[in-house]
Length: 91
Length: 270
Ligand SMILES: [Zn+2]
Image (cartoon, rainbow over all chains, first blue to last red):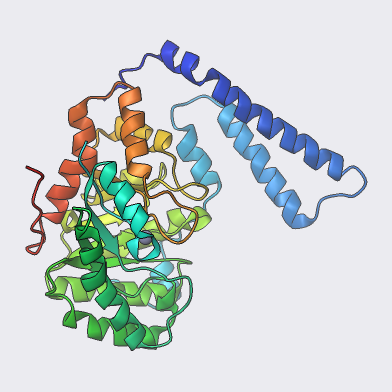
């Protein structure tokens, strides 16, 4: 079912809000860069910084499922054989 | 607009919250048993909690014209203690015939461990044995996708489980489709920080059509907003969605699902 709002209306409605969110992200990444100018990030922090970068790439990509793909980027993988790993039988 | 909050933890909220919810149109709510913020030391701790859920809260809600229903279980976090969990599961039938009990919940996974999965399966067995509805908690953040898939595996393994008697809560963009496609009911939780905003929830309503879908505040003792469902109603109206679709998600769907319990005796406002 399509939303009654037109694409033009959504862009007009959301422009300032999204602009503000983008600025927040840009300023946060700048802050990380400034703080890490003299010392490199720890492995864990570097890993997370990298995950943010990958998220930004998903946002910049084409497609209508960006939110779902972003969610999957930040999800642990599902193991179909988990029951065997736990020694639980599937009935 | 009259609405129902299908997942809210009123034991953690003030009487002022009941008054506010009533003024915003909340006519009924369901309160799943959950983690109190600390691990309870004994089965009697749960017995007292179940008395609170079946005696104290319905009386408190009634003062504001709100019909209070509840779900019983030991939550996924405390399910790590298998021995205590089994004692609680054995004690639950003492409360199953109380008039405001809709079923077993919120059961589920937290960190997707073996003990959690074991106790989840034992709760499902309790529910189907007593022909009770089931309300499910899916994990948060990075554990959600994996945990939701594991929960669906266990539910689909048990041939006694009827999907349309199960509500899977806290669905998000990456889990909603599988839950609905397999015939379960789905709940979206509007929570600041870890879950979903009203805007994203309305996106999911638009994308799925709202069939077998509900929205809740999961208001509890943490950062949460008990009036989140009215926020969703407002966002739907702002986007020009029909009043009938709004009513379906926040009123008709909960009524239809809860109505599958023989103890659900909701009286609509005259
Ligand atoms: Zn909850």
